[in-house]
Amino acid sequence: MIKSSLVFVNLLAISVLFLCSCDGDGKVIEAKGSDTSQTGIFTSAIPPSFSNDESSKTESFKVRVIEVLQTSKYSYLKVEGEGDGLSVGEPYWIATLKNDFIEGEDYVYRGRLFKTDFESKEFNRIFDEIYLVSFVDRLNEISRTELSVVAIADLVSNQVAFTGKSVKVFGQVVKVNDGIMDRNWIHLVDGSADDYDFVITTKATVSVGQTVTFEGLITTNKDFGAGYKYDLLMEDAVTIK
Image (cartoon, rainbow, N blue to C red):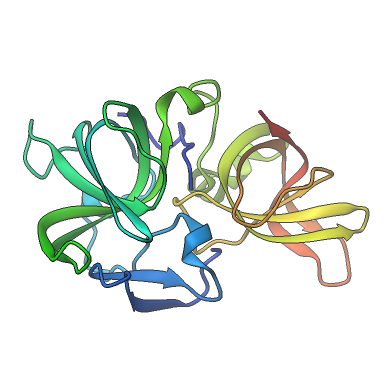
């Protein structure tokens, strides 16, 4: 099992959450002002009393896909491997935004929400138990950076420890403000702390919806003036291939 500091994977900044019909596939939450075809995010307003391991967004799980069911917007994957707490040693189902998943391939996913009696109207089927998953990526595509990527949640909770250090983060771009103060301002989410507006300054050009690895210097209590004041910031970041 790959822990929170080994984050990655394919898949805003969430200020208000809305219940919606997941294309008729049960109830999930989608972010305000975002097109879920681009977000890669399933998330939930989990009640404060719900604090078991299944609510974790920072753990990652390596699995092999053994069956793929595609709807118009979502992929249902029957997987085996890590994270099989639903029925230990048995395959289980996850659902995420639609992508070209391949049976027999190995993937890593992170950011999951456990659901029961989850209905897929397109399949006319109810999944007794399933995980809604934020980010899924092929294992061989993240192996080059997974050992050094830091979760945004870890940066937020350990700001002093990371201040002045160069680190890597992986996530999805949810907002871009280009060309302000001779730099681009990127807002990134990774499924670990999506209620936190994590901002990166860079010369690189990226697009909303893109998943990317950045490496940059962590600074705190940064005030640029004109309202650009940040408790936590990654500066002078570059993209990592």
